[in-house]
Length: 328
Ligand code: F6P
Image 1 (cartoon, protein in one colour):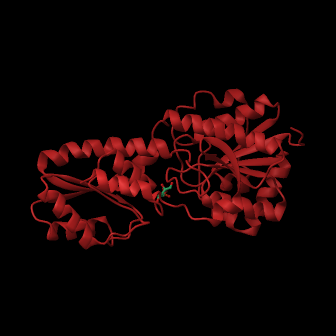
Image 2 (cartoon, rainbow, N blue to C red):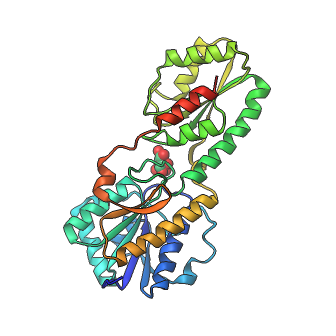
Image 3 (spheres, rainbow, N blue to C red):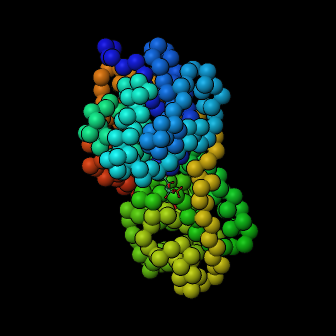
C-alpha cells in the first residue's frame, strides 16, 4: 500500500440503516490499524458544508457495533446539490487536512460523490448502506438483512390476529422504488400475495387470485405491499377495493413504516458492514477512488460509481416464481 493519505473522513448520508455504526467503527479502526488519522463528519454532506467534524480514534467507536441508526447522524443534504455547498465542503476538508472520504449511503450519496470528485479531484470510496437493497452492483446493502428480520417478525404477529378473526391484511413495507424487502419478507413470512413496484399485477388479477385461495380453504390472508407499488392510489384505497370485490373477508391495513429502519443490526449486517469498512480503507490506501465496495458472491469487490448509477437494480425472477408456487 503506497499512498499519501494521512487522514480519512467518514460520513453517513441518506436514510439511516442498521449496521451503519458497525461500518463507521470498521473505518475508524482500520485507520487506527494503519496509523492514519480519522475524522467523523456529522449529518452527512450537511456536516461537510458546515465543518461539523470530530476526530475519532479506536476508542471513540466502542460499544456501537450493536447499535441501530448512525451515531454520526444522517441527512439528505440539499446544500450539497449546489456548487457553493460543494466548494464550502472542499474548503472545510482542506482546512481539516482530510485527504480522502468514505461515504456510507445510497444512490444519492454516490451521485454527490461523483460530482464532488469531478469538481475537486478528491478521492472518495462508497459503502452501500440502505435497508432497501436497491443499489446496483452489490448483492446486499448494509441494513437490508436486519430490516427483513424486523418485517418478518412483525408479519408473524399480524398473522396471529389475522387468523383469529378470519381477516385479510395488507401490510405495507418500505422500498420506494424496489420490491426487495416486500418479496423476500413476503416469502419469509408466508404471504399469499406480494405486490412490488417492478411488477404490476393489476387489481382484478389480485382479487381473482385471492378468491381462488379463499375457495381452496384459506380463512385468512396476508398481502405484502411494497410502498412503491403502483397497483392502487394507495394501500387504503386498495383495501377498500378488495373489500368491495372479495366476499367473506374483513380487510385491515398495517403500515410498518420507520420501525423497519430501527433496531440492533443482525449479525449478517454487522459482519457485512465490518468487511466493507475495512475494504473501503484498503481501497483508498491502494489509491482507488470513485468506487463503491460491493458484496459480490460474498467477496468484497470494487465497482465504479458510474456503473452503480447507470444500471437498474433488477428483481430476481426466480424469487417471484418461488413466491407463486409456495402460496397456492
Ligand atoms: O431508506 C430508504 C427508505 O427507507 C425508503 O424505503 C423510504 O421510502 C424512505 O427511506 C423514507 O425516507 P424518510 O425517512 O426520509 O421518510
